[in-house]
Image (tube, rainbow, N blue to C red; front, top):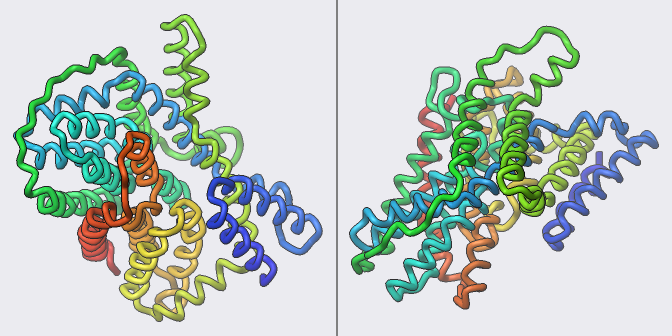
Amino acid sequence: MILALILFIIMYALMLAFQQHRPKIALSAAAVFVLLGCFGLFDMGIMDALAAIDYNVLLMIGGTMGIVTLFIDSRMPARLAEILITRVPNVLWAVTALSLFSGVVSAFVDNVATVLMVAPIGLAISRKLKISPVPVIIAISVSSNLQGAATLVGDTTSILLGGFADMNFLEFFFMHGKPGIFFGVELGALASVLVLLFLFRKDTQPVTARVETEVNDYFPSVLMVGTVVLLIIASFVPAPTGEGVLSTIYSIRSGLICLALCVIGVVRACIKRGNTEMVRRVITDLDTDTLLLLIGLFIVIEGITAAGVIDTVAGLFHQVAGNSPFMLYTLLVFVSVVLSAFVDNIPYVATMLPVVQGVAALMNGGAGIEPYVFYFGLLTGATLGGNLTPIGASANIAAIGILRKNGEKVTTMDFLRIGVPFTLAAVLTGYAYIWLVWGV
């Protein structure tokens, strides 16, 4: 177990030090675990490693990314944002509306993609009104990062939770007769609106805007809606009996839906345009780094699980929290907030999910309790904690990159002025809601 733990710590340290090489580091660590397993040091062979990979998660992420590329290319998001802006009286409400819009979009679209599609609108409005675009773009970024936890397809961490806990699309809304994590995120969003209204209270310059963007294709919008609808329908399909091809297809049904709709959209675009440019666009925009990182992490986590590291860490959490579910829940939320402010939440959530499951099994004198309140606390803390710092979430990094490319200087204090109160309002609201609804 000690060797497995040392390897895991080295991998994590290297990923923190060389973030641009995270996929290579994770895959290298996975290869080391498999190699040592083949030599008998770990109870994990090549087939165990391949079985540990969650193919449903990978297909969902890849397919959704492709659909998002088509959606952005259609220019529908830009038009919707412009329509929204024409209905607000001043800068205060324009920033708030853009932030809310980016939040709603990011509940179904990757956070970075949301920033890339909404930020240009914020830049254009800022230039037109001759105000600094820095706080505007930061507000869009933190709002998009917040809502990623609202639905199954909103963020990679949500997809990870859905795959690990076998949650379908609807169970983010209602689960076991209770309101799901979606409503906790939305309550956090409402709390964060109050923060934005306070921070931008002096920006009362009137806004004059026109709807100028023309949508060039409505089919990607149909694909976006179709993805959600089919994922909901798939959640009602009963599981086949026994094992075999049908059982395998059922286990990756959500991923197959996302991939199939992506392929349909790409093929249609190629036929419509008479070339294969969209194939290149989709492949170029595909976040292969995240996909490769996840493959490596799935194998590494299987390795440290087989070595007993996960059980040991779960035991340590249990020792600190005792038999108090509230103490464990509070610990998970706020430790996740702090850690996710500085480390990527994807490897953190992937590692902590089995730990949380293990701790829940130790509670109640060893009889175990339902882990969902802890899963939701982990996701809330890890997703929202990224908004504390400029480097805590990919969406924030992308937003700052956009500002710098446009000649704007962004300081850490510029970000903290919005990120800290925004995060505290959203986290505390979500924290209270989840415990009140799901607390044991």
